[in-house]
Image (cartoon, rainbow, N blue to C red):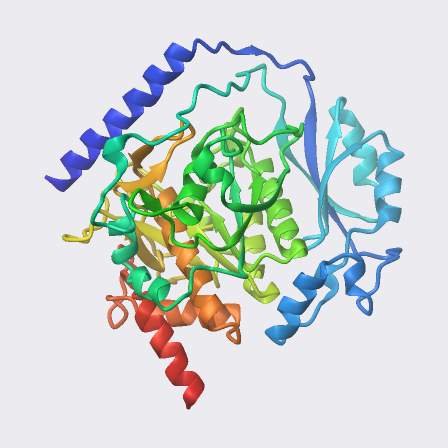
Length: 473
């Protein structure tokens, strides 16, 4: 019965989105810069770099360096930028540089003529070249759409301070953290997503402390606010503060909005964009990252994954995700919504180690797993998801400025992410790995974790008490 109800709700939401798109009347237009190809170039080393580990503030912010020092983490060779000398060598072969990853020592290069890759492959500094993007024939132009500048009278819940977001916060005992004064102040959260439609003009979201935004998708969009509202909803779950209408899980935190998802195609390059976004979040000093993104199947079948590859080490994006805790950052990533499909399992980077992979449950009363929530384990036998939270549905603010319910682990993840920031505010002496472990330990399923609920619904107040008891010992 639960599966049937979930399917009906999801189908209704899909039909609404389709109807909205049809009313919009947006038509696809020819891709003007094609044909083109983007390759991931893996470099052999970082020789010739002008940067030094002795002077990390030349390539990392002071906040990022201090975060490492506080957790006893050293700046290492993976933090050094890609060698400018190698970049120049590759540019001489006619390649345009689209992006770079210092952690994985790779470049993204754009070519109009794919035969040029042969000469690049022969360079001594190049280990390998992999095609990760082929230009599409056509794309859909972005549109803003209308927004509501005020909430409706019925949106106010007079006897409930959290308003429409109450259940998803009470479920994790986040209200007790808030009452103790921990609302994320001083913490910085990065949201890696596909777009933040109208987040710059919805009145309640304008009140959020947004430090900046950046687009990592090629070609860059000077504004992230005409893309999908998926990231807008994620932001609202954490950052909103409107008593009796909607209070997020970390309303006093500051935020960076980072776009890594290309809405026009689904290709492996998005793993590189995601990595670039994560590295940027690290460099500006973010403490926590929410990523409601995941990948299994791409437009080109030869790019897609098989389930035996879900070991946290095979996918480029999973290797990047697994490095975050080593940099002193906690990543919350959605488990995925494949539970009712043929794939069923988590995607990447949800299979990464040392992160919190978040599944979705139905509501505060039954706390049943959502039928669509992806399951584990990883190929190497690790429990996934790690924890679960309300996401079937979760209360959000849409790109139209309206309060609505949205289905998906995309929205259970930020419910957790905001409270991670609040918990860490309360225990700033903890490392990223310690925070992850404390949260898992408070899961209702901790004594017998499985691959549906993971360690279960966490209790953030107990996590706070547990952390303080350990400190006293």
